[in-house]
Length: 369
Image (cartoon, rainbow, N blue to C red; front, top):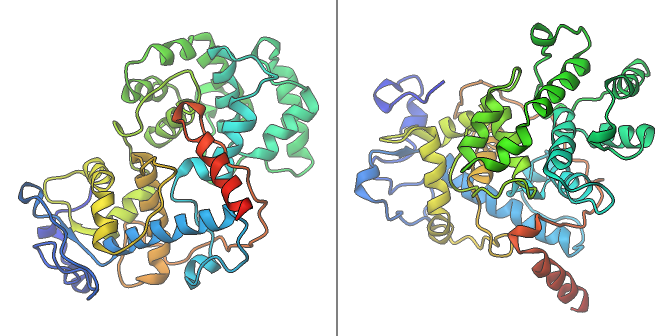
């Protein structure tokens, strides 16, 4: 569903009057007018536009406080202290970190494109660390050359019968029953993986020229819609199978569309993808305008996938911070509370990003200090 242009937005007068057409009023006396280029007007932001940048800076500040084992509390923000939000960078989240380090880059498992892709897609179909660990514990090494539908099916069936949840609640995987015919959802997904492997999808992805081509290849498969195809190609791109730029292609998910609606009443000449790209391009100037000290991921700026995710998180954050500004879904609550009981991660990123040595140096310096 696209964002309605300003002439059609009449249902929320308060939202429309938050900021002026010239992009110079932000509802905050400390804010200076951004240096907008005339050809992108009329883009009409709400006060949530500023909140987007403040949330990103605060969430990243918490990331670094946790990294250096600073004592709680890590933030004075009552909303972030109460509710669960993902990191500013997608690759810093717990599930992505597990995927990168414990699924993709494994010295004890084969590193061919076929094997790595099989591990990535198997993990991401369920998107649950506990399910991956269950399969490893029951089956041993996860190796495609040793794959058996019957063995994998039995492990997952037993887990379900014992009351275990094998799928993450982060996003919904369509059942695939109409495509593969099984009443058990996991059986359809095992057959989906088999179909991908039979079609030599890993090789096709490796031969793809850019991320959109990779997205298109994944999008062809049953049960894989736009959102999942974009998430999956991003995860494959953490590996050495592909080496796409994360700044060349983006697909907004439902949560991001909600966040965009809350940040803007009029997108001007942009569609939602264009707005996400605009945010990525303007990040440094916006942080500077608001006087925010945003510490990047050791020189790696927010990528399109990160800006997309931040729209999703700001949609949730704004339910508490700006309850009078509405998105598309109409949701007013945040379901997940922050427990503060998560384990500290030993952060490690795809080696091709070139930032892992800087992390080690940072941790050593902080320890010495």
